[in-house]
Image 1 (cartoon, rainbow, N blue to C red):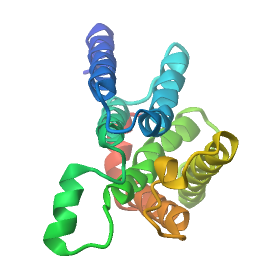
Image 2: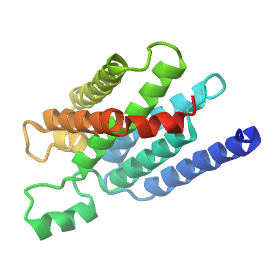
Image 3: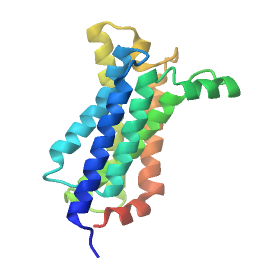
Image 4: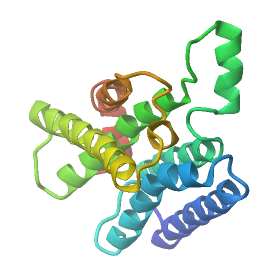
Length: 205
């Protein structure tokens, strides 16, 4: 029995409204306004892209829900900045970590969630056939997205001449961008390889 189209669209509108409310809440007195702008812009562009694409292409409900969870995570992180997230500051003190690891969670998600979107775009769009090559293409697409994000941060720092840590959150680690892409790779691999069959069922192709 298929889903009621009106009920599905209502769900999507609710998710979009939730994102809007979260964005507004995140924007209220953030720790660093400039960092907040830089760290939310990727999520905002993703939502705008999906809204523009919506009349012509629909992702699965599972994908939309995952995107909303991802965006909420980014808005939460941006409010405090990725380097000074209070929860991970507490964990840092408790476990003696050398840095605040919220940034790593964000970049893991940067590979994990987009992997579902790339997979649905490629398969539902008929660009690739299901199989190992499709999995490989999805993973390298996520890596490309991660690299583009790092280059965007680099451009922002160079063009506006702002402190590196205000945008990139390196916390003194010269290999921070490399680790960001490694975690995106781990997230994409988990989504496509480990959760591949689970996602296939959710796609309802």
